[in-house]
Length: 190
Ligand SMILES: C[S@@+](CC[C@H](N)C(=O)[O-])C[C@H]1O[C@@H](n2cnc3c(N)ncnc32)[C@H](O)[C@@H]1O
Figure 1 (cartoon, rainbow, N blue to C red):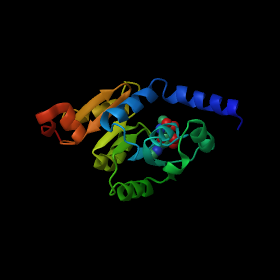
Figure 2 (cartoon, helix red, strand yellow):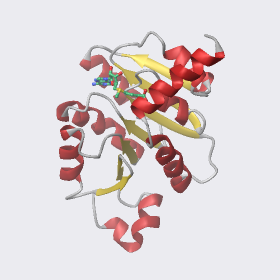
Figure 3 (cartoon, rainbow, N blue to C red):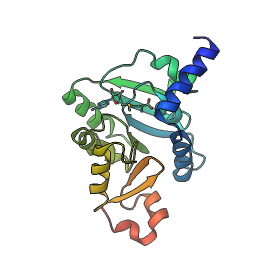
Figure 4 (cartoon, protein in one colour):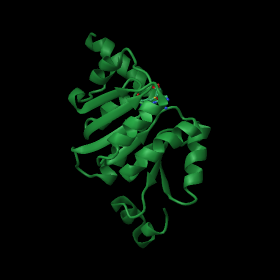
């Protein structure tokens, strides 16, 4: 791909997916993990790898999707992703996907990222594993995706859930970020 085509390609996908979201993700990572470039992140919903490219600039990212996009390599390159820090996995079958998420999240991750199907049952499926990270970022918590809204609004009744731009963030009780935000109240939920 020529440079101009690459730039057009990434602009198109960035504006489609992250319009003002990329800055929010970067600000959020700096807020929670200032200066860190060694993070371990697990993402559900790879698509063309725009978000994975952002995360790869802060550490390593493992992604899971149900199908591979043909131009993912070009997008990662054009988006400034660090290719060798992105491990993509494709699991079309739910049972294999759940088994993979179960196995991989038994290792410690700093952050889970949910940006997959946006249907409530799929979000619940993925969250049961992503929550082991202690911190999960959800795209589309802006009213545009009823599944995401319902899931996080329900969760916020018992757990720490905050907003950052178009993202929702679930934080485990007593997580260092919960302690920073809520002090003594960090132990009150979940
Ligand atoms: C909104 S896109 C993700 C965008 C991606 N985060 C990016 O920045 O390029 C949603 C992706 O989730 C995938 N997907 C749908 N259902 C899924 C599931 N149950 N688990 C994982 N991925 C899923 C779709 O194939 C699609 O590629």
